[in-house]
Structure formats: structure tokens, C-alpha cells
Image 1: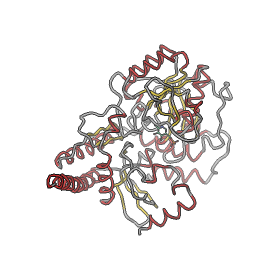
Image 2 (image 1 turned 135 degrees about the vertical axis):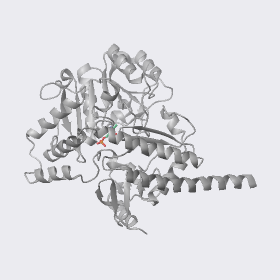
Image 3 (image 1 turned 120 degrees about the vertical axis):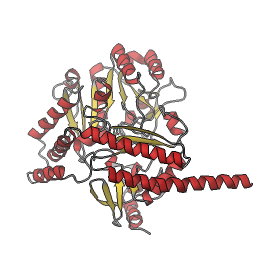
Image 4 (image 1 turned 180 degrees about the horizontal axis):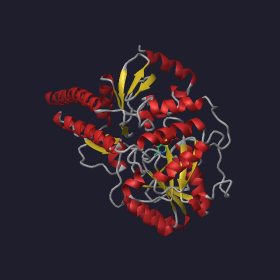
Length: 440
Ligand SMILES: *Cc1c(COP(=O)(O)O)cnc(C)c1O
């Protein structure tokens, strides 16, 4: 009976499922979540004082590592002057200006409090701008939990969407069309049927909520062309990829300009933040300038802006992404090699400080269907084995992983050493159970 077990039992008494966001519950890997009490650099410390190398990074924001002195100092200084005013501060303009300078397709930006709020507002804005109702999303992409986005494909690729959560009215889901990531033909087919009604296409330019899937060479350009042709708004959800894969996000990396961009995570440095930005002519439709209503009591909060600005100070340092990319590649190629040596089929992906690890025989993973076919039981074994060794990966086979600037070759070396042990244990158990089969 560990401390976390008791804390989880208490939490469940007062909080549904004991967590404030479902993936934290360990439901996809089995077992119970750890309760953490502190973070420092690349490490998290649980309530029993066990230290873990952290590859979750609060699901993305902690690109500088935990409790980075520059960010903590900025926030500590700022906090003495008040927590919230609900009135303009110069910090909001500073962060807005900085993001507009760094993200190629953002001319104006509005701050909100979460990625969910940003995507919900971006969709309303696209609908208000185009005066159309339908939106098109991709199976396996996640954009937060707004009603119109909790939608899955109906039976047959060309039918209207159906709710993927209880509580979402079918009438709302019907305005969401669902296509397949990296399969432009499925998008073309939906445009051919509904093109004049499609307000927006929303996509993670690198899918990070079904493990980590890179866009195939012509995919994003194809979306851009279709949106141009049908005059639909192209929305890149860069909540995860913004300032994670490169300074200009995925749009900079692949050189494709969306009309609107959704941000979050890193731009808040660990504070609750989201943002939507893009073409000024579209952004000008937002209240008070235009007819699309959107508001927030705590939006542009001074502490959150300060944490975001301090984080962007760090990521704009020369060579930041080069070092991060190199280290992430080193981690992934090491894991792949060790798995191979242990006879475990494994495919890896990395871009900037983001990675994907797939237990599969396939040499590339490009679609949601392929992700679903990966060996999930094997991932669970790997996850728990690594956790035992003091390495914390995301507790789900459908999440991307993250390396921070606080990670170094030392943490990567330790991780690989731990993985080597875990892979040989897994490999021994596979051999053993196949021998049992032979015996019968
Ligand atoms: C995390 C995430 C969101 C949701 O952001 P929240 O702040 O959790 O609401 C939206 N889109 C993507 C791509 C994300 O990774």
C-alpha cells in the first residue's frame, strides 16, 4: 500500500475517478496514478520521494524542464503585484507581439485559458467569418473537449459525424465531418459532397494525440489547396506542436500557412493558457471589433503571460531546438536499437522535442488505423517496467512523449539502460509463453 494508493483512494471520494483529467488516471495502462509533489529540471518526485525522469512534461508545456529558475524568478517577481485585474496589461501585448513575430501565420492573437477554449472559439470564429456551419476534423486528432469536436465518423466514410461522448447532441455532431489523417482522398470526398457548407478544416499538423504521426509529404499542402478552392478556413491546432517542434511551430517547419492557429501549453509555461491567432481579416471578426462573441474573466492573466514570456525567452536562445532535436533523436534511436536487440518490433518517430514510440512490425505509421493495430499490451508492460526503473512515460499508448531542455545525455543514458533491462524482461516473458504454447 503506497502513499499514492491512499491519496488516490481519498481523491476518488471527492473527485470523479480521483483525477481532474481522465488520461491521468492510468486507465489505459492499468494500475493507479502516482501523486507527485515536486518537479525539478528533467525530474519529478512522487509523494514517497521516488524520483522519475519525466517524458510527459505536464503533457507538453514544460519544455524548459520543471521549476526553471528564469521562469520561477519572473513569476515570483510578478506575483507580488497582484494576480488578476480583468483589465489590459502591457504583458498581454508583449506576449502577443512576440508570438506574432515568431509564428509565420499569426498576425493577431487572442489569449484564452486552455486549448479547449481556443479551439472552441476558433471554430465559432471560422463559422462567423464564412457564415457556414460544417467543420471537418480527423479521426484520432484531439482539439480539446468542445461539443462539436467530440465526434467520431459515422458508419461509412461519407456519413455525418456522431457523438463520441454522452451529452453531445446528435444535431451538433452532424455538423462535424470526420476524415482520415494522411489520407487526402477522404478529405476530397467530403469536400465534394459538402464543400460549400464547410466553414473550417481543423487539424493537428503533426498528430500528437494518437501517439506521434508526421504528416505525409503532400498532406498539409493538399489541405491548404482544398481550403483555398472551397474558401474554407484552415485551422492548425498547434497547442502541442507550437514552440515544441521548432520556433515557428509545424507551420514554420513544413512551410504551410493556415488561416487560424490554435496555441496553448508552451505559451503558458505551465500556467493555464490557450490562444487563437491568424489572419487579421478573420481575427477582426471577434468582439468587440466584430460580430463573433468571445470573452474570458481571466484571459491574458498577468501571471500566465509572465510565465509564457519567460518560457519564450528560453526557447528563442540560439541553438535551442537543435540541441533538443538531437537529444530526442538520440533517445529514440537508442530505444529502437535496444528493442531490436531484444527481438521486439518497434518503430520510432521524433521531431523537435516530441516523439512517438510504437510497438509494431510496420516500418512507418501514418494512419490512425495503424496506431490502433500496435501492440498495446506490450506498451503497458514497457510503461510499468520503466516506471519501476524511475522513468515516467505518458500512461497511454496513444500519446506523444516530450523531452525538455533540462534533459541531458545523462538522463538519456539512464533511460536507455533502464529500457535495456525492461526489454530483456519482456523478451524473456514472450519467449517463455511461446515455449509454453510449443509444449502443448
Ligand atoms: C492538449 C491539447 C488540446 C487541449 O488543450 P487543453 O489546454 O487541455 O484544453 C488541444 N489540442 C491539442 C493538439 C492538444 O494537444
